[in-house]
Image (tube, rainbow, N blue to C red; front, side, top):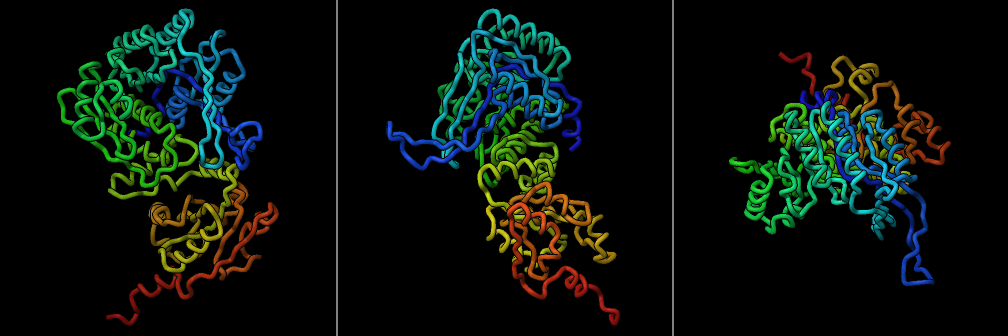
Length: 487
């Protein structure tokens, strides 16, 4: 946990292919009369930082400071990148070189629901000598104040031989680690890197050895080490990561995510976390483990691969105890609001319920199951310890502290997101999240449900579900208390 706290003091330079990812969402329910092609009725556009810019955004989200160096065109798309960088909260600084002869790289994905229909790329491969010289000057000036350097190579031309040479020379003189996410077939270009982070396909392509099993992966990594002199952190999707170091036995860390919703950008999360950990003084094994935990959080989430320090701490706590902490479900309010907005764009019906949920009993389970029947996604808000104590539940309450109650709730199948609130009521949460459906037990009446009027005013509804009678935490506590007649 202390390692993550040190992220906020670290400055990382990210050099590589800067891209803009555009997602066009819509409905495809008819065929064009002009050609045998689907017609996409566009409903929404979404823009995200991509390529090296996504690595930098991950670093900023984790609490570090990223200096992004790359090439953009003189166009509106470059301005969108600058605007998105400004929205990261100050953790992402730009040192972008403008190229009037090349457009900003944009990858546009067209989606109908969850179905990916088409990707259209606008890009120019290669780098002019003028831009290359300016990039090298920018790299040499920025690396002086950096704790580590990340090279994000997507084979679009920015990471040229001359740029790599400048990076390795400057890093070596300052004894700074260099983390390379490689794309080239010839790995010898990366000699001078501290660690490279290929996936199975990239390592197979560059070494000519299939990485389908342990033996093949080990042989391919051995070749990569011979060519680069670097440590190899092999990302293996659902199989986790494997670490190969010169003269040492291989080390493997299994995948952490039990649910995989979106793998796009998870490799950037690995690179960003690994670089921050190494810059913060972690050894290679600890850094690799932390990056694998972060990747597990990223792929458990829909629509974005960014991971916050809070999410990483919760996930790490789960691995230390050898259990699934449900980390992807336990989010701070800011992240819940962002997820709620994405669900709204996708037409997902969101339900909300709340309570102390101290000792989980059949009444709680029935409530959650019935609540999920009325919505696509269920958000559960839990009273903090101080909030429970103000509810006059008794001097011994809560029995379980807030972290334990969050962990238990996150492990329950009907729950999609769980968060904590410290106020006496969840009214402010309901106002922020704007759920479509507000769910409480039938022991309430609608006029006693906090936020009912708010939800109904926005076109939502209130559902009172029948729950198992005779079950309550108060009764459980009373029955377990020692009798006054006992000897």
